[in-house]
Amino acid sequence: MALDATAKIMGMGYPVYSPIVHGHPVAARAGIHMTDHDFWMKVDAPMMESAKGIIVYMATGWEESRGMAHEIKEFVRMRKPILHIQPFFPEHRSC
Image 1 (cartoon, helix red, strand yellow):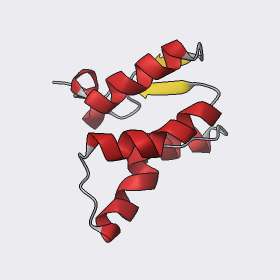
Image 2 (tube, rainbow, N blue to C red; image 1 turned 45 degrees about the vertical axis):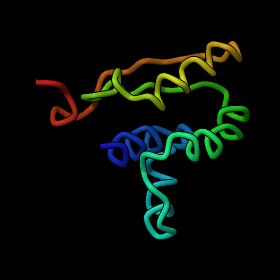
Image 3 (cartoon, rainbow, N blue to C red; image 1 turned 90 degrees about the vertical axis):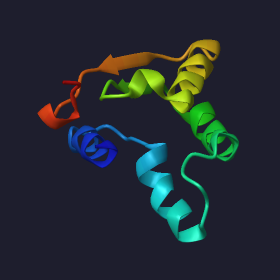
Image 4 (cartoon, one colour; image 1 turned 120 degrees about the horizontal axis):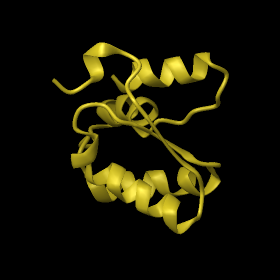
């Protein structure tokens, strides 16, 4: 799901960094747990600082994501734009 959305947004000409797409495959290879919140927040921090804004892809479960909640709070704190978008693909929507 994250890969599909990242590819679609990149295909529209926007530079995108997705912590899931760009980080999880490397973490899997390194044996780093995918849900280690503290680890991922340290990895995300410099990316959030350098980002111009955040796109919140509102796929199933996004509101329960501890990481997403943290990222949104950080972008509010930094006064950077937050864009909420609906899923592009039907299979990413809630039932």
